[in-house]
Each structure stands twice: as structure tokens, then as C-alpha cells.
Image 1 (spheres, rainbow, N blue to C red):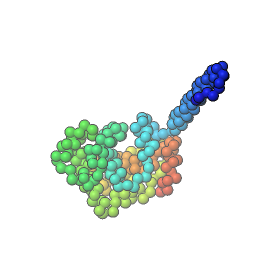
Image 2 (image 1 turned 60 degrees about the vertical axis):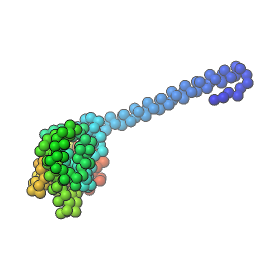
Image 3 (image 1 turned 180 degrees about the horizontal axis):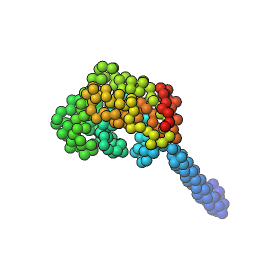
Image 4 (image 1 turned 90 degrees about the vertical axis):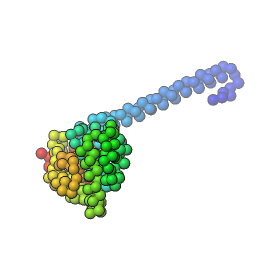
Amino acid sequence: MQCLCGDGRLARLCLVWGMGAAVWGRAADLHVERNSTLTMNSKSAALIRCPWASNDLSIRYHDEEWGIPTHDDATLFEFLILEGAQAGLSWDTILKKRENYRAAFDRFDPKKIARYDHRKIQSLMNDAGIIRNRLKIASAVQNAKAFLKLQDEFGSFDAYIWQFAGGSPIVNSWRSAKQVPARTPESDAMSKDLKKRGFSFVGTTIGYAFMQAVGMVNDHLTGCFRYSQLVPKTRPRRRRQVR
């Protein structure tokens, strides 16, 4: 800022005042930034989540995907393959490899995967970015073929799979993670029918994890901040009683 004072002493005073104002302004900015950061951190820390969401990757998945009712066939197929790949492993392992899976499996395009031959399967076996289990890789190919048949029969995989939840999400009311089941009569029925239609790696436990992931059931604990956010959107068919 240019000083218009002609007197030397006034010019020096003006300079000192300008420097002081700049310092004060910067201090005020820092105070605002610090308070904003503390506010955001406080809000994040105050959120209560399901206990399995314990790191940055699982927290983001929990907050942005898990339990949201999903009706897009492409997304449903992706979760079907990923849940099968998880068998015997942690979900964190799959989340860390998810982008690698998308690249290796043609963005989970069932039409492309259904055409995978032995050479492609072998190349996947050499891909360190995914779970290199031959049975799981072969299962993805077989499931893609069965998936396409279901689309032809029902018009969409969504129309088929959601019948096992009665057409709308089942809203549970668990207060503790110990109360959440690993399987239900619905997942038993779904698993049985999927196997009959040629799918593999779709046991009832894997099936229930799939149902949780795509929002066919709302298994967020009642104390989790996502529970109340999802309930108004679900139009619950029924609610399980707390045991």
C-alpha cells in the first residue's frame, strides 16, 4: 500500500501501522483456520460408527456405500464378485485391492468376463493386485455367465435378487455387533437358488454379507449415525426384534 503522507514521521508511523495490521490479519486468519479444522475434526470424532469401520478405507466405505439400497446391475455384480473373492479373508483386504480388481476384471463388465478363456485366467493368476485363487477367478467367469442368464430371464439382476428381501430393505435394530447374524433364512434361500442357477462362492454367509453391502438389509447398529440416515429412505418391510 502506498503512503500519501508527506511528513517523514507520519510516513514511518503509517508503515508501522500497516505492518501491524497485516500481522493481526494473518493471526486472525490462522485463528479461523485452526477453529475450522478443530470443528471438522470434532464433528468427525463425534460420529459413532459400526465398530468394524476402524481405518480410513473402511470408514469411507462404511459412510458412503455400505447398506445403501442398490439397484444398479453393474454395482450388484461387482459386489457379488468381490464378496466371493473375500471368502476366508478380511473385507479390508478386498477394499485395498478393489481398484486392482476393477482394472483386472474389465470394470466388472459381465459380458466381457463371461468370455474369459484359459489364457486370460492364467494372466489373472499372475496378477499380484488381486486374490490369486484359481477357484475364485474361475467362479467370477462362471458367475458372469449365470448373471447374464438371470438378466435375460428377469429383465435385470436387480429384479431377481431383491425378491429375497421382499422387494424392499429389511431394517434391523441391533444394538451390539454381537447381535448381528452371519446368515438368515433370507440369505439361506438366496444362496440355495443362486447355486441352483449355476453360481458359486455364494454360500449363505457370503450371501448375507452381500445383502448387507447392497442395502437389502440395514445392519448398521442403532447407535451408528448411518442407521437413522438410511431408515427414512428404506420404507422397511419389517424390523427384526432386538434379542
